[in-house]
Every structure is written in C-alpha cells, then in structure tokens.
Image (cartoon, rainbow, N blue to C red; front, side, top):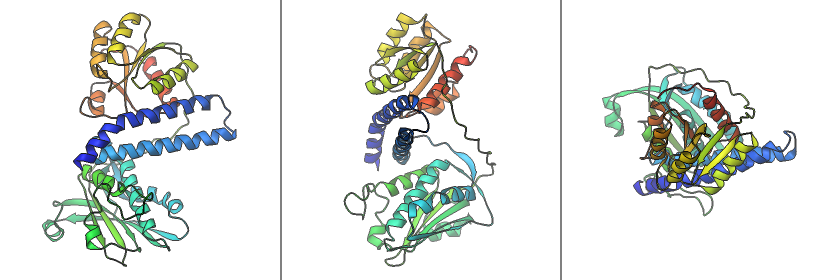
Length: 376
C-alpha cells in the first residue's frame, strides 16, 4: 500500500494537468458552437469522462492518504438514497436493486463524494459477481459498538456508528480470496476487466474516515460488505442549488504560471477569448522574473503549486515583496507535502483543484478581481 501510495502521489499532478488541458481545449470548442448542435452533446460526454478520470485520481490519492477529504455532517440515509438513483442504470436489467433504509437515521462525518465512490465500486463488483442476475441490497443502520462487539469482531473502538451494508446473491468468495481482496492490484477478474484497485481505494477511503470495512462471504452464498462510519452530533447543511454558470469576461492582465505547456496554452487561450491579457511563465523562477518585468500591468497571478525551480508558494513570496497586495489564485492537481489546500485557505488565499472547467475558472477569477483590495 505504501508503494501504490507513492505511485499515486507521483502521477496525480501530471495526470490532472493532462485532464485540465483536455477540459480547457474542450471548453474552447464549446465556446464556438451552439448549445443544441450535436457536437455540444459530444463535448458534454468528454467533460463527463474527464470528471470520472479526475475522481479516480482523487480516489487513488485518498487511498494513499495524500488527498485531503472534505468532511461534512451528512445523514446516513441521504447517502444511501443518493446512490440508489444511479445504481439501477449501472446494474442492468438482470440485477434487481433493493434499498433498505434504517428507521433511525443518524448523522456521520463524511465526504459524500468519496463514500459514493466506495459504494459504486462495491456495487460494480457485486454486479460482476452475478453474471446470471441476482439481487443487490444496500441497507443502513445505526449501532452502538461496545466492548463486546469489538472483542467479538476483532476491530473497532467503542462508539456510535452509522453502518452501510452492500450485499449480493452472487458467487461468493473462499477464505483465501477474501483475505486478499483489499490488496492493490489483486483481482479475480479476467485480463482487461478490472484493475484490482477498486477495493483498495475503498479501503483507503474508509480508513481516512476513521471507519472500518469488513466483508462476509462464502462460495455460492453471496457477499456482504459492511462499512462502519463514526456518528456525529453535528447537523447536516442544506445543499446549495446547482446553477448554470455563464461565461464571464474581463479586460485585466493575468500572469499564468504553469509548467505544463498544453495546459498553460489552453488557459491562455480561454482567458484571451474572454477579454483578458495574459503573460505566461513556465516555472516558478520565470514567474518571479515576468512579474518583476510587468508588475505595473499585472492585476492577478494564477500560479501552479508544484513547479520546477521554485514552487508556487516560494514564487508568490518573492512576488509579494514587489507588490504586497497582489491578488493570487493557487492551482494544483495534487496537494501534497509541499503545500496543502487547507493551509492556503486558512491563510485567506484562493485555491482551485485541477482539472477545472473553463466556466468555473473564469468565475473564480472574476470574483477575486471584483473584490476590494484587502490586506493579508
């Protein structure tokens, strides 16, 4: 697991830069076609695939404990209810889906998107274990894990927990297989039908939630996964309404510091198409030099966190000496040991995770430019 964690951390930054460039150039095409043209639908599918790829990368980083998760109070039954809307399509006609929600709902602290990914991985495995059809059941429960429970099951600590069970009527597993299912790259599927990472990612996500995941299975008698997540006394927030984000324009000058050539080019083209002037920098040292040369023109700095020669934070510290109140947005496809998203946000900086859609990027830039100058 340590080895796959290092692998995930090493490739995530570059991988998300590639996805960001795909999303950027796709956004440029989208700006030039009408909404109802067939090509618009193709682009929507491209963006959807990019989001799925980004989610996979985030899952790998969470598994390796190199990605910060967004823990929020959430109702356990809301998680079960949300995933149930997606599963019937994924399962196909041969598999019947049942949702059994607990009468006693409880609150847990969780990153809902990450838990959704866990449940989706488990559901897909269940579907593959029922090639001739069967029943998939997702249920929720609230339990008190006392000393007796811990002694009997061999894991956990006394506390209140929300429990999500994912059970199937499929082929089941023998003890030897069951002992290895959470290992990275271990799979019983044929070549080309699975990476062996789904359950390893699920394991890492649940552990990062301070929870537990266990499996009960016998050959010919199906499989049930049980996920235990610590309960919370905090109340869930009302979900924000999702709104369509129109293109926003500007006329200011932006320094874009990004070492990935294609992503920098895509970002430059997007900004210029929406009225901005762009000055490019290819690494941290170049960012400092370009700002020194054009500091009287630059209104905002968009800077990658991880770059050659100087990382984003080091470059910004030099830039700040020349202009203390310059507005900055940090961007990264991987928040590792060099700099963390939470630390940036605590210090009042703006941060975006790559890949980001052109509309979201433009909105973030416009929001910051429209803010009054504020001392840090």
